[in-house]
Image: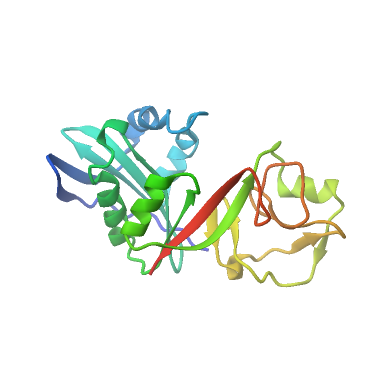
Length: 229
């Protein structure tokens, strides 16, 4: 898996209804405004403040700007074969005005990839509708399970899991990115009741644990993976 640095700003002036919006590269000076924009995304807040610096260092980090005001933003991680779109946010008063569409279209164009993927919470109907409008199709679904955060290594030790010399045969999620099974270069860790991958959060193949994890067997929240080719 290879990440690429976004080499420099690319600017696209687009007409969105009554707005003249520029799609620009996010800068360090935008941090406070972007965190403020996203702080009420969910009942519990948002994770953007914790990943902002990393997003600024790698991938493509775009903002939609009108008269110096940030109306929305989007980040893209770049892999060998595909781009991963994440963190799409638009100010509440500017939603359904084409801003999310323009951010997504320009992000895909700048990425230079022919395959684009993203993951959406099953209950997020507006984002699902937007993705389908842009030509994305559902290809898989996974489930996020709440619980105390423990690393895969801690779980391996607690459950006395051992390395299994077998190949992974299905796609998985690591660091909230949906990846083809060929990207997984570690072992499957198992006992008679449980099999997990050494990912963050741990990806459970078989069995269950009372810690934060992602699996295919059901959980607290369902996420749908979409792909556009």
